[in-house]
Length: 413
Image 1 (tube, rainbow, N blue to C red):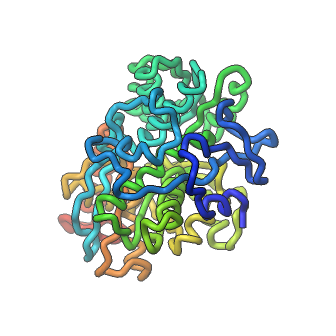
Image 2 (image 1 turned 45 degrees about the vertical axis):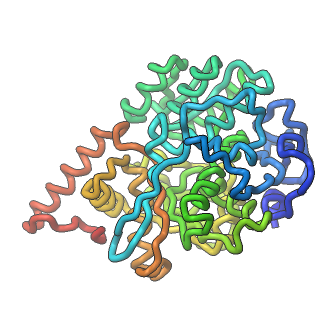
Image 3 (image 1 turned 45 degrees about the horizontal axis):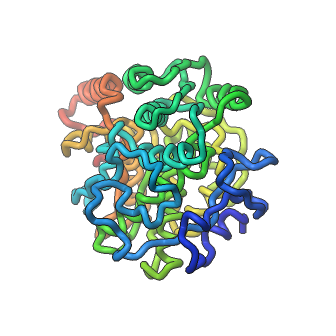
């Protein structure tokens, strides 16, 4: 088993306070003091953090209406906390494709995406260790999140984003005071440019810096609490680089290791078929990235070409008993329309989770009598023009088929 996953699955120490226990850890098992900020190991590998302390109901601060209600399990200096009220998003009962579901409305976050969980904790940590300026690369949501939290923390922020990113996603980055640089090419080209610039400014990539995962794991704590300190049978979540998959895995594994829960939920990840870096390794049972043909997708927020934590993400899916599913552009469009019809105004990337739930039920991986959590990751307000275009395309398809309300070329919601 990969050393990173061994540690995440290991038994927690039960004595020292969490803040004194955390260290950076390389895949080799070598550890480093977190007093010196790092974003990768000396050999270039991604870093993790040593296992977290877990949580019990009596250690939750119920007065807090944010992820900081779980401060007892967050290994950052409380005096450096930066918060805009992130976390504690609604868990809404609903129906989907012939069965019950619970929609987790992560798009209710301060900047409209789940990224705020990771950003709040990561920026709090970086401020505590003296970082005063950061570099980030993003397809839009992470950049807006970093810009907002850097503004709140008084840090300078430079964000590289694809020149093709929706204007509504990149406009907040500049509006919040960040230095925005649009890069021509693919999402991977943007990441490569950030790596070159990381020699001169601290690279606070949400895909590399492990304190971002320290924040996204609060999604697991929150679902546990909102489910009456129980565990949902399954969780369906979009997959780009994997910070939500890993956050869920780390959080629930900590709860299991400390005795707060008796079993893990199955984690199901959803990628757009047009850009699925994980599909081939998953199908072949490996954990190695392989070249693939990436095509344009409406789910731009998960159009990752070369995820940096592929072995860890695939290991989390396998060990949770979940799986990976890919969905077509037509399936994403139909799922988006189904969510809008339920009053849930999300971006196309978030709709992949609902499309994945449809596919998983059709494949028999999710029973109709189960009630999986479907994580809706980003607001439609940042992609309103694209949402309108997709709805127009569906309406045109319906007209051409001559059937009012027909589900165009895909499974119905």
